[in-house]
Length: 145
Image (spheres, rainbow, N blue to C red):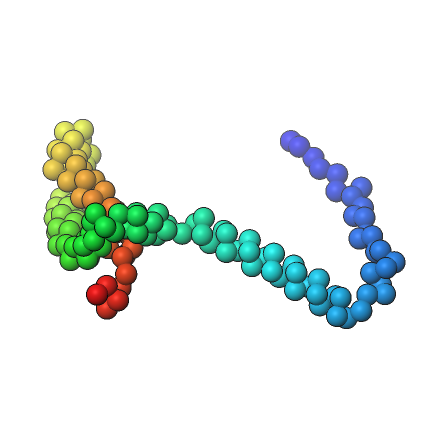
């Protein structure tokens, strides 16, 4: 068992620069504004780095001349792909519900189940994960023309 000694911790008070006490309110506000600008720049950089659609928007912009209709056609076929995916999921869930808790108890039953649903769901899911972001990456339909 590990023990920690926390009684000996003495935080050091923040050092106060004597010239800071004589700062004018305008100087304090200027410093606050500068910190806020730095914080905003950091937040914008973080948001840009964590924007999942940025990669797809860059692809659409870079290849706009070669594939001008890609976002629109992706938007058009997306409901068909989603419906197919949903249909497979409904079949899978309905089969499991009908068979009960022992549906996948044996190695054979599990392998049969994966053979029937695993590959199709996995591949269709991968296709959806590619088409959906491209459909969203293009300009909105009312601005596309």
